[in-house]
Length: 478
Image 1 (cartoon, rainbow, N blue to C red):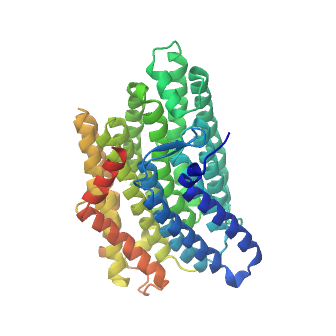
Image 2 (image 1 turned 90 degrees about the vertical axis):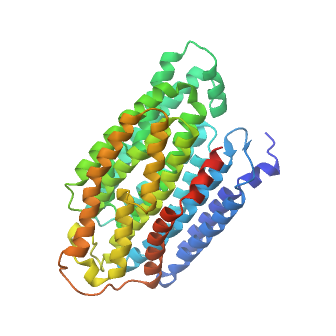
Image 3 (image 1 turned 45 degrees about the vertical axis):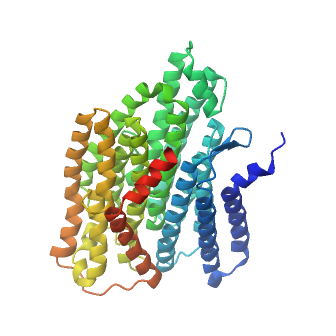
């Protein structure tokens, strides 16, 4: 098969990222301990340039290349740019964590870049095979990242749980894809959509395949009842890895859901919408209720992630352009909120000791009023308090659900959000009204302080001026 040069130009971000990841891997093998910062700087430069390339391709138009396995469209360009920018922030926080814990190694950044490459392949996949390849590249990189601290028993246990359950979910997803291929005779997403639009005799096997695909998607999202890996992995992994897992992969999971459910299985929307309703309600209920009982900040944010996944699924199950754009807006803004929340744990951590308990936030206002205010913005945003971006993200999703006459679902989402507001406001109460165990001021890197401040102010700024990003999400999906 002759592939024209124009096809490779549309893969410029992927080719550039892969080339730089391989280069950094080689560089890492030859530099000494004192030059470990070189890997970090090269990684950040790679992500920044890749983000610029992707952003400049936003208006390129839609094109299916590489024999129908890869699609470039405005949605892919925006999501890739968002992933790059979120991971830039994650790497800044990770460097501060790894330096303070004495574990500054280039493997984290190399594995992170390969994980980002997997996300990019998922975002631009136009074939069942491409989706699976991107998903496995992402998953294998994350398994290794969780097990980075080989001397940590909780980290090793979390990596094993993640690997076993991830393999199970991947097998289910692959089984569902094989059923789709058997029923339609093609791996191409557009070909599957065309085959399903015509009346056929394979309705039963299609429904079975759809069930397995939804199960695989639910696991990657962390939706109930396939959420069991999230609290243990988030709690057992180093915080630098947790903030990576809890942010950018959610954007890629949204893209995978759009490619599989909307682009290829849109004619079965009546069936998968009912499944997503169950997943979203269960995720909202269990995530918000169980988070109240947590004393660990990382486990609380893990159950918070589960509840936010419920909101993200609401936009997709609405089945409208407004719902899809609201869900995309939610995925992007949640990733920004998530890295900020975990970054505050790193900010409060000391050498060898992670500040991952709620009690570690007591009296933060006395120690640092500025960063107490930054954490307040993040917690209010996750709770959905105006004028933060979390409020407008939830409002846009609820509006999309109400527009399709699922008012009861919107009421249930609001009810569980009110319950969830308790554990977010509890953190604010600990910071402002409880006595700190230590009145020592915070000593952190300057780049960490700047990054956390910009992160929180971005959450506030997007809440005050949400129209630009909302309009952009609507445009790329239009």
